[in-house]
Image 1 (cartoon, helix red, strand yellow):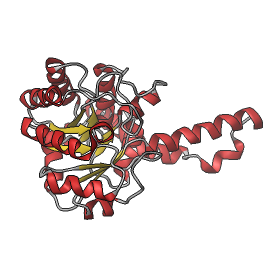
Image 2 (tube, rainbow, N blue to C red):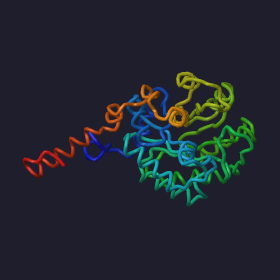
Image 3 (spheres, rainbow, N blue to C red):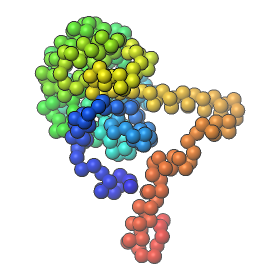
Length: 304
């Protein structure tokens, strides 16, 4: 069944579906998906929600993750992933693309594009990956105002407030910010770049709303499994850039082989086959739909 058939589409908005997943027992596991194909593959693997990373979007466009991309460019990614997989998506909204009114606009266009949740962080532009040094923090009251604006604008979108304050304000300062953001209307908190289990436990002990853990590679957080985060009391876990990193390394291997070997013949066994690709994107479902429409309108005609 394809997204072109109305009966195949979800009847509830993405935000409502995201909230239901949060209400289920266990931890909500969200791998990063940065285009429609990766979203379909994540769904096929059994995931019920996805994460759309600003770093992955930026890198796929050949840009650094410094808050350069626009809200309309992000919506392009949201639309294709939501259309392809029909799963609720937590979208990285960076710093909200401006101040209060800009945040409200972001919330509305993200909802229209098919997002289920949005993450807003308390950095100043140019923002950085949360696992890098020397990030500039917004005053907590200004970030709280953005969260309040997002909550006022949303119809169903889940609001996730991210704090990057551990590096500069310490654990206690980050927890204090998180509590302020909850008071402002955040549905969940994303404490970024925590460095050990003690910090994760401290956040869980002090903050009552659902918490999100970021299991990014090559960062400050030690490797932990979804089950370990769940045992620490966390409700969500993301792997934001893992899929892009795997794909990018495969690209390097392919392009090097094309230059050195004069072709991809030595890598065929590492490729997704044509049949596997067609199965993933539902190629034959679209063909069958096209034929069924033509046959119903022009009896005796078998297709285009």
